[in-house]
Image (cartoon, rainbow, N blue to C red; front, side, top):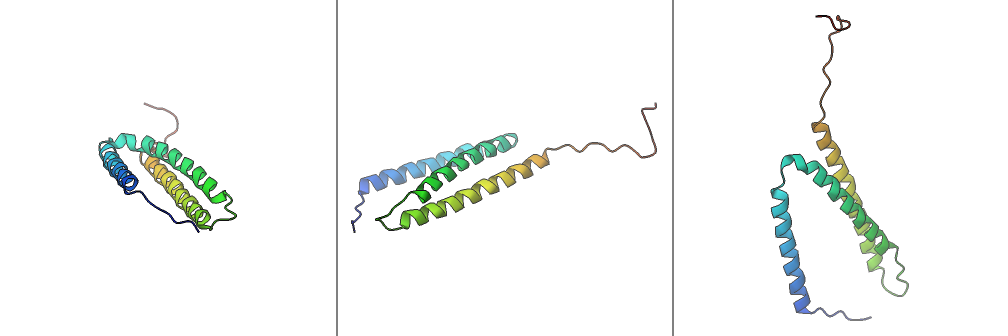
Length: 115
């Protein structure tokens, strides 16, 4: 079995990029007006669907001579990304229902348009 060696410089650079991405993402999302949340959620769901495809590629890749860890991690990624996509669409649908106008109901006794 092959030993894994991690370069501390690569790890520090990766953590630095992760911290910057988390900070920038929080700053951008917190400044989005409420009216734009629904289109933003739809775009996020599309990006999550792309991550499902990537997870399927990792899970379906044949690792005949290696341990099945990559396949299991790919399977977990497929499940997690699918839950993310389904939950995102449910939230988007719920938000869109908040903006629907209800049609006024006409009284049952009146017919036509009389003034």
